[in-house]
Every structure is written in structure tokens, then in C-alpha cells.
Amino acid sequence: MKKEQTRLAFSSCVKNLATSKETEILVDNVNDMSAASEGCHLAAYNFDMYKSDRSKKPVMEFELMDKSSKTDWEDGFIMADCQNLARTLMEMPSNMLTPEKFVEEVVNVFEEFKNDPKVKLEIHIRDEDWLREQNMNALLAVAQGSVQKPRLLELHLSHPDADKSIQPLVFVGKGVTFDTGGISIKPSAKMGLMRGDMGGAACVAATALGVMRLNVPGRIICLMGLVENMPSGNACKPGDVVFSRSGLSIEIDNTDAEGRLVLADVLDYSQTFQPSAVLDAATLTGAMTVALGGAFTGAFCSTNKLFDMLRKSGAVTGDQVWRMPLATLYNDMVKDSLLADVTNSTKQKEAGSCTAAAFLSQFVKCDQWAHLDIASVMENTNHVKYMPNGMSGRPTRTLIQFCKQYFPEIK
Image (cartoon, rainbow, N blue to C red; front, top):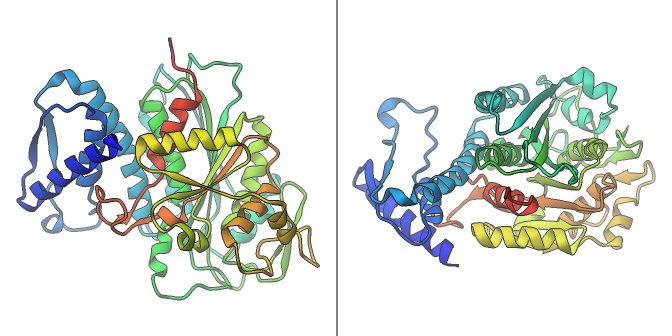
């Protein structure tokens, strides 16, 4: 709570100074300079990439009065800066951020770390031919309605001091760069917000960046399935059946339940790395927004241990998670199909977030798995007082903090 109060206090100062067009700000020392830095840099963020110079707001620069707190200040800056990266990716219009351009943006961010001795970094860009070879037919079914080609982006990070007895931690991100709903088309009102439907992939990429910059001693693999969901003569249709990478057949009852199709194949692929744990992040269901509003990320966890780590991480960052149920009843509902092994949309319309999680669970063999439905926190509309409204980049800081807790510190 003290950390959150510090973030709020410093962000309030930043907002007030912004109205008076102050750009050079001296920051005095407080007990928690990391939280102070987060509050300042999250509040000062502004997305104006496509505005003319005369419309852009001046960039704020912060200077510490007491240099002894510089390390904590820098740590807070990194946490906020990584979340701001996710915010930027989510704000970018879909014509500027196709699946291919998402890959280019992320690869450019990581370019400076390729020769960093503190971490071994591998980047793999998987194209449509590779996806077909892998039988990722659920992901490809979503992509087939668009002229934009799908991609799978892999980031492999390995710290030289990582405990080799701990298998890699794998993050999976939903990267639908625009979601019309496909043939099951969405209402036109606020459809433009669906440029942020790649928020899971954005947060996963930003988490990887934070892990590198903070020198977290672990082995992490980030997998981002990138597609565009469009209606066209080539689009998949309600009632179609596809065979996923796992071999399970899927009835596509609703083409607007596309995120779980993308994740189904990528989650199955994640198992090939023999992970110690798998966490996926996805703007998956509007039902999560109805359930939780903007206060929490919904967390479906296979074990108490995994949820407890996420809960503690959220308590540190102020960006908290709320546990949601995984239950046999929901598994039965997603298996109720006359055409296939599972269906991507159940006959019962209640518990939409829970049935979506149950669907994903069919493709995960790892005992330690968490599904984070971040639809509720995709957009900030006065929920988080120390951030301006717009795409939120949540829960990037919580995921970075989770990694810091997951891997033992270097002694």
C-alpha cells in the first residue's frame, strides 16, 4: 500500500507540473525511490507518435537531487519504461502494426542486447510455411481471412548465472493485431480499440525486455502468436472444424472467439520446451471486463503455489490479479460438440471467461500453468490514477516482478 501511495503522490505532482508546461523536474529523495520513479514515468507517458510537432506535448525530464538513490530510481524507471513499451505497441494503429511489423518493432528493441554478455539472446521469426509444417491449423484458421501473413515470434533469454536445474519459464502472448471478429463480426462501436487485442503479446515482449535490463538470473522463453482476424471470402466460418497442433479437433462455433484458437496451438508448442511453468496473457474475453472491471487481471492458475507468486507480485507492483476458477464443469462445456473434440464457443453463454480458460487447458500438459485474461485491464479509463487514459500495458510490471521472484537471486 505504501508503494502505491508513493506512485500516486509522485504521479500527481507530474500531472500538475505538466499543466504548467514544466519539463525539467527535480526529484527529492523518499523512502521508496523505485515506486516514485514508476509513478513519475508512468504518469509522464504520452502517445503522440503520429502527431505533428506542434501538437506534441513536451517530454518531461527528471533529475535526482540525491544521487545516492539512483539505483532504485533506475530500477523503477526500467519497470515503467517496459510497461510504456507495451502501451506504445498497443496504441499503434493496426495499419502501422501488422503481425510482420510487430515482429520488426520488437526485434528492433532487442537489437542492442544481441551482444550483451549478461544474457544470451536468441530470436526466431517463424513464418507461415513453418506454421503449416507445425500443423498450427487453429492459428492459421484465424489468419486466413486476412491478407496480412501470420507470424510466431520467439525470444529465448538465458542468463549466464541461471540455475540450470530450473527448466525455462515460458510466456505465451496473444497477438491479434486487429480483431474485427471475422465472420462473427463485432459491432462497429469502439471497434477501433481492437488495435489493442495484441496486448498479451505486447506485455510478454515488454516482460522479456524488463528481465534483460534488470539482469534477472533465469531462463525465459517468450512465444507470441501474431495474426489479424478479418472477414473475407477466405475467412473461416462458424461451423468449420480444424485440427490443432495437438491433434485435437476444434469446432469453430464463433470466429470472434479467435484468441483461444491462436493460443491453443502456441500453448501446445510451448510444451516442447519442457517448461517449469507456462504463463499466457491474452485480451481474451469481454466477460472478464464485466466480472472485474479495470481493477484486476483475471488469473486462472493450476496450482495454489503459482497463484500465490502472482498475488505477491501484484501486491508489490500495485497491478494486482484476482483468482478465477478452473473446474470440471467448464471442461465438460467446451467438450459439448457434435462435430469435434472441443468447441471454441459453448452453448451456455454464462461464465465466458471460465469456459475460455477451460478450452485453453485442453492444450496444456505442464503442471504449473497460469492463464491471465487481461481484457479487463487492456484500456485505462481512470482505473489507475497514476496513468493517463488509453492502452495500459498491464500487467507488464507484475510479470517482471513475478520473474524476479521466480528465479533465485545471484549471490
